[in-house]
Image 1 (tube, rainbow, N blue to C red):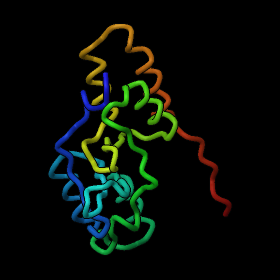
Image 2 (cartoon, rainbow, N blue to C red):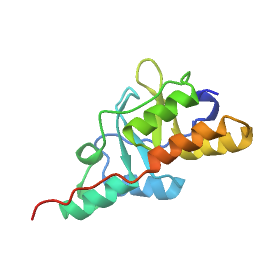
Image 3 (cartoon, rainbow, N blue to C red):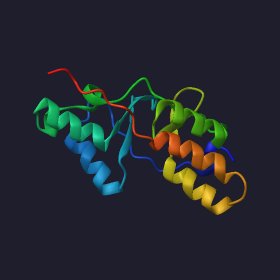
Image 4 (cartoon, rainbow, N blue to C red):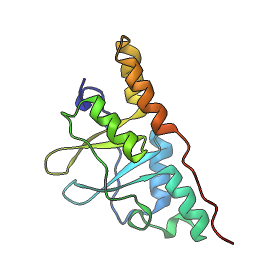
Length: 152
């Protein structure tokens, strides 16, 4: 199974200068927690999650309308290609502890997004022996990281 077989293709995006209030509304309206940030050519320059919006708003003590995607987006972009196998996609997700990856073409333009949900639902449909490595990789992605408290 390849990324293109199970990716979500109707993906909401934003530009680097989009304010966080607009992005949060997009997420709410489209029931998603992840928005790729794209430039004028459609190339993915970063990603932003609902968590990024919450933490940026709280720690910067600025209303979301005053913060823009470029200030809080994640980069460099971790992405996969449409022909990548699900095993390779999971390895990338596990290595970088991300729950979603943009699927890009050879020029870096967005084609879709593949999420843990997409993979779990595809694995559930297929059943069989491929399930164990998928569950193992997902457990690695979900594992809590060790956080060292900041010095006072």
